[in-house]
Each structure stands twice: as structure tokens, then as C-alpha cells.
Length: 234
Image (cartoon, rainbow, N blue to C red; front, side):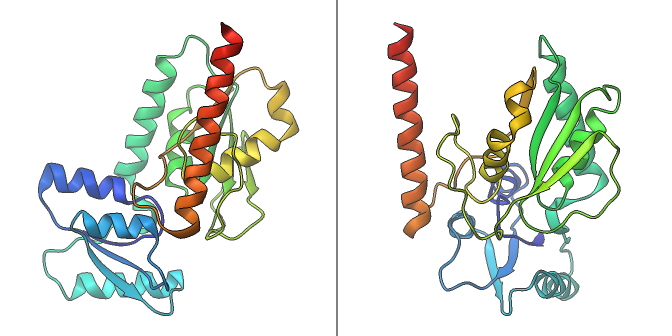
């Protein structure tokens, strides 16, 4: 399997390796220092192909060329977007909602390629009273969406980490946590009856430089808040 990756594709790679024993080649932008997710994918056995310049269009073109030159390979598109992936997320959304005593009035999520957003939208088609708010953390999403979906743009580049320290769960600094940051700062969140935040994944297990330091600080703050709440409940 071959694809361009910057963020959280390490989890699908781990599942692919465990269930199918297939090898993944990850085509990504070349950086002075590899992103922790790329490091972890390499440690798990992925073949890393770094491209310079690292523009998305260039990386995607190199990924297509790689597949053309390696018979038996399959290209997984940006965001792993295909009908099967969107339907899988839609099915998960329906299962989550079915287990809830009361349905959320709004669902928040991060938006990159739009695969997650489209899955949540599809999974709530029969519950169209649920509003969906997506936070674009990188590439601008341009497809038409139903009126119940609102998009916000994160006010910084994708490579910029979120400065939020208030998440009560592990969250990816340059992806989900950005959406959570926007959500808690949005005035409507305080008055919304029931809010569901869709968190895809926690931080990479491979940490380096400021990213590793920032993740450790976030985890430490979360633990402190939990201890305070436990004491208050005594």
C-alpha cells in the first residue's frame, strides 16, 4: 500500500501489518527532522519515501509514480478516501449514537481530507437534527455540504501544533486537538445542550524535540486536573 502521509496514518498501518502482513510504503514530504508519526511508521516496518519539494501535489504525483513502477501495489488516496472508508466511519457513527442515552445536538470533528467529516455526515443522515461542526486543520475542504454542517478554519498552518492544554483525553497536537481548541473557545459550546467531540487518535508514541515536550506537558496538565476533580468529589 502506498500513500502520502503527514498525520495519523500510523494506526491504519499498524492494523494492516497485523491483519494482512502487507508492507506499506509511505510517500511524504521531506523534512529536516522526521515527524514523530513518520518515525513510528518506519519503526513498525514501513518503507518511507521522502519527497522534496514537499508540496501535496508533488507528493501525490510521486506516490502515483511509485505504484505504477511497482506491480501489485495499490494506491491509497489522500485521507484514505474511498466509499468503503466513508461507509466504515458512517457505520461507526451509527453504532456510537445507538449506544447513547440521549443524542448529541452537535458533533465536532477535525477536517483534513474530509473522509471523517463525510462519514459522520452519512452516519447521521437519518438524524438530521444533529448539527456537525468541522474544523479545517489543513487543506481547504471544497465539496458541497448540507446546511446542518458548518466549517471553521484553524487560524494557523497544519504544521503548527495546538496550544490547547485543556483536553481531558490524549489528542493529536496538529489534528484533533486543534478542533477541540476551537470548540472550547466557541461561545455556542457553553450553551449547547449536548456536545459530542469526535477524537480520532492520541499523540504519537514516538516523541521528539518540542513536540514530545509539548505532549508531555499536555498529559501532565490533564493528570493534574483529574486529581483536582477527584479531590473535589471526595
